[in-house]
Image 1 (tube, helix red, strand yellow):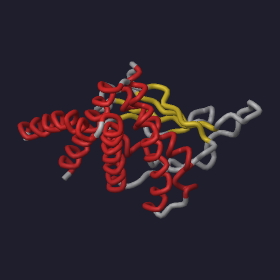
Image 2 (cartoon, rainbow, N blue to C red):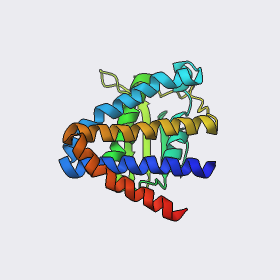
Image 3 (cartoon, helix red, strand yellow):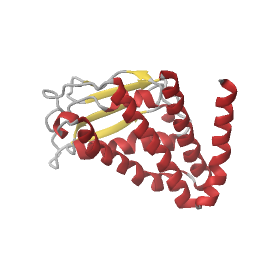
Image 4 (tube, rainbow, N blue to C red):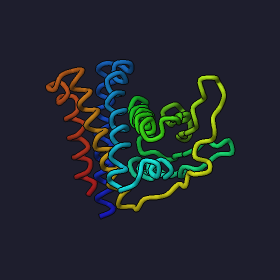
Length: 222
């Protein structure tokens, strides 16, 4: 069962990358990000509203738990750290060995930055979310930081959940369920944006060969 789950996640991840890269090749980076960004921000916002309901937790409890990093480790078949506090009161999360290998920066920005902006913008709106290192930027690892936004008067505010943040973890079953939800929606978002830009007929022409190829590769490897 574990192997089947890993294969399924891998296929969805590959299809998401295929559709995203097809849009980049057809329309360029600027158009790609302009069309994908709203979808992925909405994905994050929807997660912020749905995850507390799924877990039966308050938004405050979700905000002080490490819900996202194990999910992303499953999506990307990656290692690295869980989210943890730094001395300055911010939170750091490092991921290594991402299965995307950073081959499509636009895809990385969408799922690893825009989705986080939408999620944390809803669940913890006084926090700043930043993907400051990425394989797609040429770095050796990916790193996310969470810290309180600077006040309008230019003075820093109190550290992010330094006293209340618990880093609570979910079960592997819930992590896997959320991982399938996130990567499945990423695939849908990419195809939707591709269809918006080039039309549904052309979108099919662009993604079907890659999907067929991944299916053939899977069949010959079994």
